[in-house]
Length: 196
Image 1 (cartoon, rainbow, N blue to C red):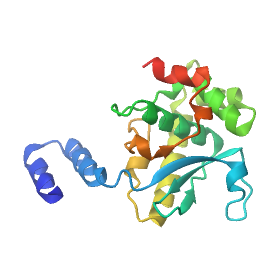
Image 2 (cartoon, rainbow, N blue to C red):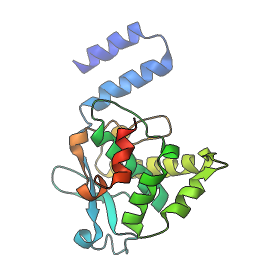
Image 3 (tube, one colour):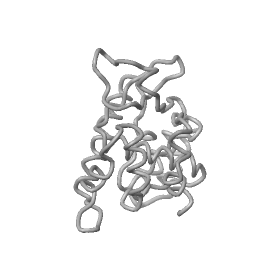
Image 4 (cartoon, rainbow, N blue to C red):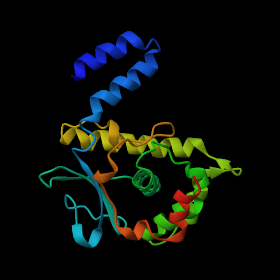
C-alpha cells in the first residue's frame, strides 16, 4: 500500500530532501504512464486554437481518450525537451539528465529538422566562452516546467514525470513517448546516445 510505504520511508530517511524525492517517486510512479508525450508533424495537426504553429513539428501531452494539450515551448526549449525525450527512450533503465552543452550536433540537427534553419545560432546562444551558459539553459528549463505544469493541470495530472531541469531527469515511462523515427536516425542524434 502506498501510504504504508510513505510512512516507512519517513521513519527510515532523515534527510528531508531525499525523503521528499522518495515520496515524490512513490506518488508519481503510478501516474507516470497516464499521459503520452507525442511529437507530431504540423501537416497532420494543422492549427491549434486558431493559432499558427511555428515550426514543422509540435509536441503534445495526450490522454487515453485522445485529448491533446500543446506544449507551446519557445524553439530552444522545445529542442532541449525533445533531446531529453529521445534520451529517455534510448536509455529506459537509466534516469539521466542530458548535458546539452555536449550535444551541439544533435541540438542543431533537431532544431533544423523542426524550424528549417538557425540551429547553430540558437545553440551559440546557449553557450558562452566555450562553457555552457547556464543562465540561458535555466531559462529554457523554466519555460519547460511552466508549460508542462500548465498543460498537466488540464488533465488533473501531476507534472513531475514530464518535467526535466538541469538537475532532474524525465521520469516518464519511455513507452509513453511517441517520436518519429526521423528524430532518432540522423547520425548526429544517434551519437547522442552512444557517447554515454
